[in-house]
View 1 (spheres, rainbow, N blue to C red):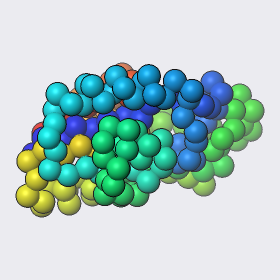
View 2: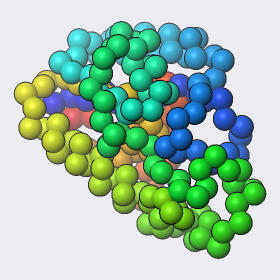
View 3: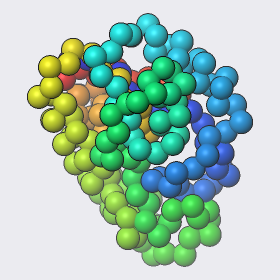
Length: 176
């Protein structure tokens, strides 16, 4: 099965702000960015099914690309950053933040998730998707989800996964 993962376009969040599962607004350049994404995605169409994170930054892009009613799956949400959500990193007073910076692939955010939690969700989604008769699927999601999908499919290794962060509005193709 071929799966095209689509990362949402850029967001209207101040630089240095920690956001994950918060439903944030998209930037004013949404239509220009989304047009480029839609054009790139059209080279891979048609799709047997479309899935999306429930967050509006993913569903809005899905609709713009012609998928007004994707299958919504909460396992496709971005990481829950817990107590740090929507706070500037330089204003977070939490001893755990330094541990997370040093080992973000293993340390859980305070009262939130860690990378293993997100990977588990995404793996569960992909394992279930493999049981479907689809040949080609599109998934609208988030940077962390795309990293997990890339690791799952062997596109890149866990050790250097964040070096492969898909840009806003970008595509990641995997086969499972």
